[in-house]
Amino acid sequence: MPGFEIFGKEEKEQVLEVLESGVLFRYEFAAQRKGVWKVLEFEKAFAAYTGAGFAQAVTSGTAALKVALAALGVGAGDEVITQGFTFVATWEAILDCGATPVFTEVDLTLNMDPNDLVKKITPKTKAIIAVHMLGAQARIVEIKAIADQHNIPVIEDTAQAAGGKLHGRHLGSFGACGTFSFDAVKTMTTGEGGMCITSDENLWRRMSEYQDHGHDHVPNPGGRGGEGRSFVGFNYRMMEIQGAIGLAQLAKLNGIVAAQQENKRFFQEAVSGLPGVSFREILDPKGDSATFLTFMLPDKESTTAVNQVLREQDAGAIRWSENSWHYYPGWEHLLAGKTPCHGGWPFSAHGKRRIIYDPQALPASAAIMERTLTYQVPILLPEGQKTKFVAALKKAAQI
Ligand SMILES: *Cc1c(COP(=O)(O)O)cnc(C)c1O
Image (cartoon, rainbow, N blue to C red; front, side, top):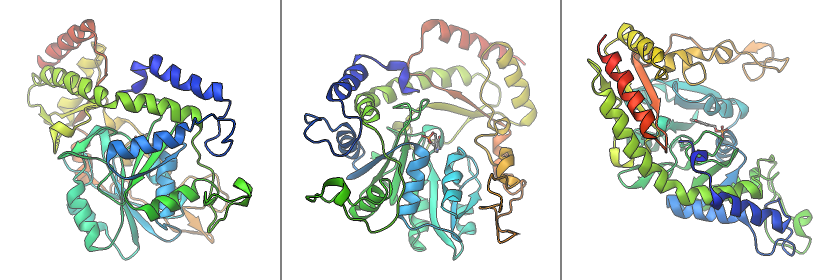
């Protein structure tokens, strides 16, 4: 990752077709567009690729989560459970619906711990968002089974795991809805963009309407202005240029995953020399999208010492416990309930604080995260970079 590493003539040709048609909007202009419907074609291709049946393109991975939650009926007063290790977008979308994010521990998969999920379900739980963080599988089969017992829909935040699978089935296709991001640094990218997939035609229809102000998209003699609406919506529409780039990138996705799997093996071998190292649990290595290599050292002190040497060699790893965008104790703006809204919404309503977090609430995750390090796996890995990496790891192994 990311997909821009291999931008080429395919993306350029796709974009030019859109510019030559002169139509940037995904709907209408049938006569002018000369048969070019890039977003629609991208949706069909993505639905076929993932095997989900239906796909709805939107403006971002954050929008995809919002659209999925809204279409599932999540609103004020509801609780939505997700994990304490994810990107802020996952809980921003929950807050944006007026609902309360509830966080679970992660286990050695670095994804939702199903045992903790069971403890956090209440009568107010209206959805569960399992995240396939860092390109690899959450325990989605167990999570889905628990959710089914309580009749709660599962959304899979697959923003970081496009092209990933579990036992042959695409990630994002297990729950009621899977959401994807094509932002500038994701495995396949359209600059900004997202997708919701589902096998439920009714849910797809609700998402399609919600992301376009409620338009029902039923052909009628009045055109777009005469379309019906059954509920209020918003504008999260993808534009044609994004759809065009998406088509070119999707065609490369299997090749990207194969290249990353090979490069990840190289990284893993080099890291294996560190004393006491262990690796993140990967439920199905064949289906790993291999965007990251994540490993653990015996304790916090050894992790700090090793990463210090790696940084000195210009080969420092990401330490999520120091990275405030992806891990619960670092989300100080969430924990403090900071909002631009005067009334304090969504943290407060009618002058009373309604959402309160304890920074120490996830001790099991903290014990894992403080000794966890991650490397991003590139699609292209030149020989010179490999030699430098091996030398840095050898040096770190000696401390
Ligand atoms: C990137 C990301 C998102 C948000 O996607 P955007 O397209 O950047 O809005 C959501 N969830 C996770 C886990 C992500 O990594």
